[in-house]
Length: 231
Length: 386
Image 1 (cartoon, each protein chain N blue to C red):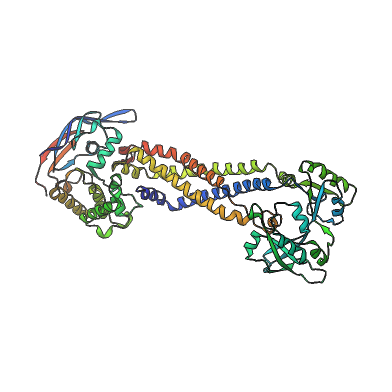
Image 2 (cartoon, each protein chain N blue to C red; image 1 turned 60 degrees about the vertical axis):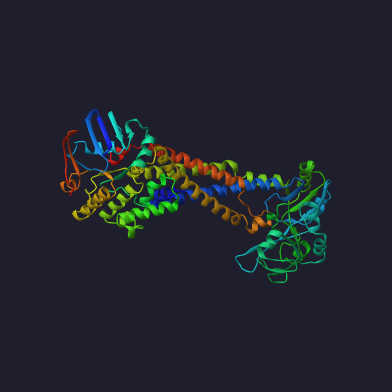
């Protein structure tokens, strides 16, 4: 398997007030194509920072990041935006749907950046909503959907542009157990049936159990790397 | 166009706030359109008014009656070619709420004085033959759906000599002007009106005076006023243009006033629109960060915010000016103005273009800072609520 994500000696720090805090210390990591990687660790261990770097939302202070064949640390802001649109789908803890738009309009948003016609966009949106089991909720607004349904809309939005990588930040953190199970099963199907590479940050050991590989982070370093059989 | 749903969604996010801002912009542009329309309209009135004939009014009070005997004396002044008296019948047509003014005059003299009055010779002859005949402006004919041969019943506000209030006028012809919208007067025969009146007989509220040389209008006007200087009915004479300018001058510098009001309103609107867009961007920090996460560039997010400001200002501005374009003709088509030969005012193309430019500038100024903030938004900081 080829590495979809490759980090070499990545250093990242933030400035808090007058203090400079190094969050990631010379980190090395490879994620293979088709992996379902779980990232665990205590708060402040650098999980979300690592996820942001892999997803192209932030740049490292030092080191190299290659994702889907592109050196992200060399891209400009607009190049990075175009790269994200092509290669990464994001799923957030609090769904981050646009509240005034219907489910189908929310899913359509990433396609507005493509050259697809309106009819093609509509067809793709319908397929994505069918994939997450929400065809009958297409015209509903986020406030008219349950948390689990909103997260499924967010997953459909993340999938709509057929990205190389799905980046999920606590995707079940705001859901009840039943909805969380549904979302995790959906992610597993996407990983196993469609071969999507998934990187997921979670605090929940039950969610982590769905990952095929689990990385434990602590104080900005990789503390433990365990390959496992997914649940 | 494909981004329109996003712009529309942003505006619908707080519908009450958007509606209130929209309402403010509509009101401001309604005022802008109406006031500038009036401004340009007055300029047009002045352009169309003539220096080639004089208007003689009472020195005591504009609109106060003068004796008809003045006519003969004015005609005797060198340089005067014709004099037409104005006797007025005020009444209502069909409904009490529909006032109408009929001007009793010497129509042949009017034709000599106002060379822009266009009437066919047949109809001018019919006016001479028909004592209760009237020549009606084409705009008024159209307004009431009248045609030549129709009879106009009028309920006068003052009783006639025979004790009744009912007048009957037969339409014998129509007149038009270079600007047909302003052909709004109804001319009757002075003698017919004068004989029927119970009070105010042999009087005129003004005299239209034709002169042979416009360059001598000031001297002739002075000669007329001098003629009546020792009379109990002194006169105030000026050419039509000067007369209107003097009247308008009494309310101050019209253009300065109107432009001042427009600037004050638009300046206030600038802050209001800026506040709406800025607040909207502040509230949508996370949403804008999500758009950037999904692949929208900094520049495209900036343009989305600017498009919001543009949509708001242009749509509401267009509504305001459209409303003004409906209301202004209605405001300026009353019977008093019609009797003065001033027809409905319409917003000229220049004001539409100015309104579009003002809306554009308003949107750009009020949207540029919020748009810049949206452009500078850091995704990671915004998503983590920092």
